[in-house]
Amino acid sequence: MSRRDPEAGVTLIETLVAVALFGLIGVAGFTMLDAMLRANGRAEAALDRVAALDLAFAVLRRDLLETDAGGLRLDQTGLRLPGARPLGYRVESGRLARTVGDPGVEQILLPEVLGAEFRVLDGARDWHSDWPPQDGAAVAAAVELTVETAAGEVATRLFQPLSTGAGP
Image (cartoon, rainbow, N blue to C red; front, side):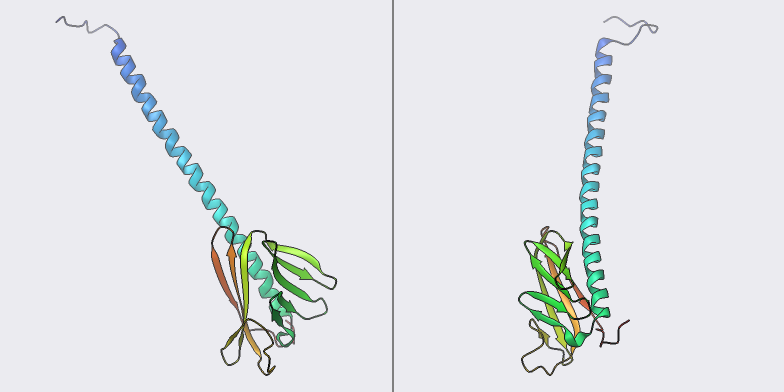
């Protein structure tokens, strides 16, 4: 076998090996970048869903604090709050909607909802899905809202104490 001249250039085989290694490193880098961008997109979507839930809960919390708990109504159609501008909450067509006034102006709080359940806690610590109870003797102590989003997430929030009619 002959020896190479030390001043000779790089052989074709060495060049091909270097190009192949460079290509493998490039593909690995692209794969990692693609995976990171997909994970970032999923994280942003999840944060957007959480922000929408937080906003809906904040609006309901404010409404409950500003209305008289004694006039609160809950049945299969949703939650209704009394006042100079009556408020209503219901799930319709896969959306959690808030209705303001009479006739109502609808505000969509959550656009993709599989279901929502309101419950009212009375002073004796009993939960009710219809309010006021048949005997009419109980006072609402808290309202609970459980929402199931189209993404399969379930969020529950308890709102207490409720206003007794004096306003904020």
